[in-house]
Image (cartoon, rainbow, N blue to C red; front, side, top):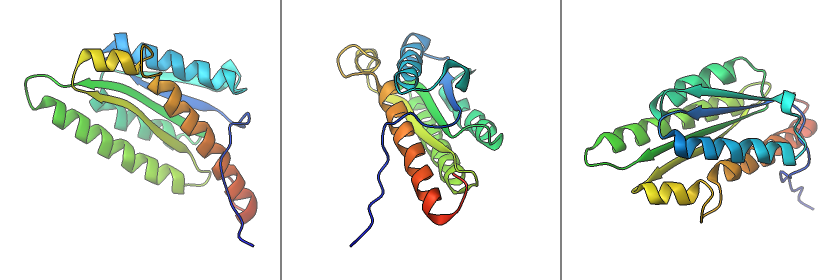
Length: 167
C-alpha cells in the first residue's frame, strides 16, 4: 500500500514573513492584507507574522534571500505587481523576479530547517487586471499564495516527521 503525503490547512507551527514590493502599492497593499488575513484565519498569531517591504518587485529576490537566510521562518510569501507598459521593462522585471524567487525557493526548501517560499507576484497586462486579482473580481492572489505557503509548510513538516529531519 503506498503512503500519501499531502499538506493541509491546519494551524501551522512557526513564524511567517510576507515580503511586499511597494511599487504599485495600491495593488500590493491589498495583496498583503489578504496574506495577513489568511494567516490569521488559519491560526497564525499576529506576533508570528513579520511584513518586510522593499522598493519594487525587482528587489524582492534579494530581500527574500536575506529573510530565508535568517532561518527564523517556516514560510515566506512574496507579493508584488508588475503591470505591462509600453516598453520592455515589464519583461526584464517580471522575468528576473520570477527567476530570482524561484532560485531562493529551491534553496530554502532544501535547507534544514526547510523554508517554504511562495510566489504571489502579479504580472498583468493592465491595471484593471491587477485590481481584479487584488480582491475585486478574481479573488485575492495574496491570499492564494499564502494558502499555498501554509499547505507546503504543513507538507514539509509531515515529510520531516517521516525522514527524521527537522522541518
